[in-house]
Length: 256
Image: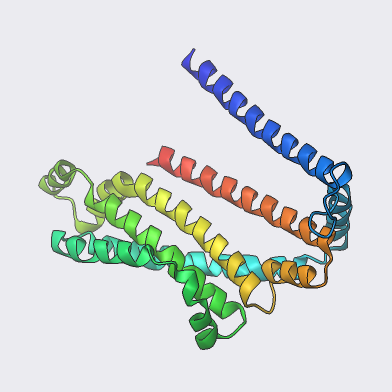
């Protein structure tokens, strides 16, 4: 009965989400075809759909997609590795937690995207500056969640494992990681999301390639329908990647 109610609630929420998208598309169509909104500001959704089909068939998006995804993968891999390692070692003592957790939280509250000109100055307009910025921004939610996950492990579990002769590796593998994993996974999902947003955003400001750079080029050339088609493509790509990461997070929670 509970599972049936949960399934019904899930279907209901999906129906509301779908209804919202349909209503948005209807308003968009009416605004451009009935209410006289200038097509230079908001192109016709049918024209955007045709442009999107043309973009997908031509494959012209592939070089920019490859640049953006490679930047995202490298940045997230660096942030995940450094964030989890630093977070684990910080969480080993109460003193280091008191020192570094507020420090990391304070830095994370600063909009690091403001330092993009410095990243461009040091690393250039190419992918290196986007990777460095994405790594920096993604590092903080990962390290903070790792610290929170390991520091909140029940001390009774640690004491019990030690009393049974568990080594440091066994303690980490069979006690600390499973207990901290749900919190760490949440931080990884957040880190992935902010890395993706920071890379796309920085590509629109200062870049030589990538999906964000291509969208800005289309806007400068006043190709509004094609620009909206690329925006729709990026929105779908981000939604798919977020859904995939959320799926991995759910699987990891069940494993833990």
